[in-house]
Length: 586
Image (cartoon, rainbow, N blue to C red):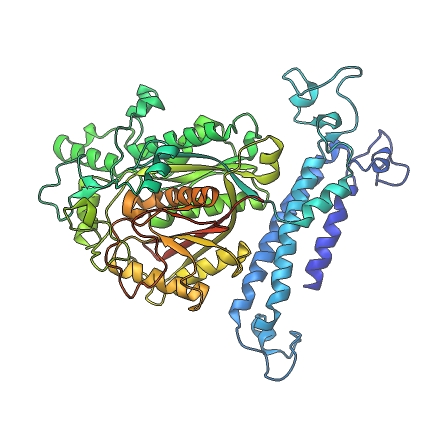
């Protein structure tokens, strides 16, 4: 630990060591007679060294994260009744573990490593701040004909940071993690094909569930779905693009375009620091079904050459990146019904830890087709009700399965100061993310809810939860017998039995159905608007509350409440658990 901390402190000073001469013919070590040192600047020809430092920070942060997890390897004291310093005679040290009573120091080091990573990235950017004007006597706004712009440099007169020393900037970088704001949203859902339509329908308790129209469900155990209505992909895609994309990608592209336009982010962020993380649980199953029919009925030569790119789960993220010139990370999150929430959480981490300045994130799904409906129904996961008002019944005694839904919701996440500097509208701040795995069963949640509870606890801790908070919990609330019961246990474990009924709880799946890989995104939308407007959307059709699901539900109609914190749970096949935490921006 001592060596690691020393290393961290030493790295802070590394940029001041030049690897090339500042002036032709003499070495520069940023001595007192160095013009660069006098004004606290670093010459732009030192950039290679900074890249090396940035890479070193990445490795150092990886070390820190590993160290953070070490305490969980030994949860017992070294020896009862004596202090443990992890000396050579310490049993924990012999095993390579660290005792649980050292955890506070480990957390401190982990936080320090985060700040150190931010520090390194800030140093990298500082290098490009020149102390000379582009051309004497001429204002430069980094137009296309600007020599500085051509080589990717930023001159000192291009920002209010020009008069601040490297040391001041680094001190700011070390002061706290980067905050993450939500600056744009887009929605294609069973309740409407825009954000406003979706949220207004939620507040009104509108039901988006009806008999399936995309195929004839006669003979299927489940005949209801929450389908997207009146969606025209031609509003967002060219004709050739429509023919080359699956419905799940079309939904994603549409929602992302709405979100990007809402945020007005394009042209306001460096493309190399603009990323995409987009979730989907199943991907292009509609394409898979169609091309499988072609294979069986017409032979292998009739299978589309675009079958694979249309079907694969990463295509939504790829298309969004292409359309919005996102040259940073672009990848999917595929964790079943937790996919969108994992995508949003990991997008937050990209920004918080300095890997991106803005991320288009969210989730998409288009699985209302015969094979998926039959598969879910045959595993007894879907509601068999034929009444749309008695089908999706989270936390109700009558519940017997979820109703499959479809659609996409997209959020634009942005580094908070970046958003403020450009005057963006900020819907709220994502301030907590917990993600765990039950490691228990491929479809069933762990009965004691340990993993789900820990995901909630982690998100709440990161968000700075206190008992004084007025909390809205958008529950995963699928309406399956086991899921709802386990989630209630998780809430009790996370809040404590004495406080478990304090959060206002609702499941918007009672209206949207279960949008699978997009569920976490539409529920993030609901959570953000609940905070902003002080309105808790209802759980509709909750007539007979299960006494074993003893939480404080908002049933029937929306509730006005002054909220300070919103949590959104997502649980997925494979044991994936996610909790997101949002706050109003103060």
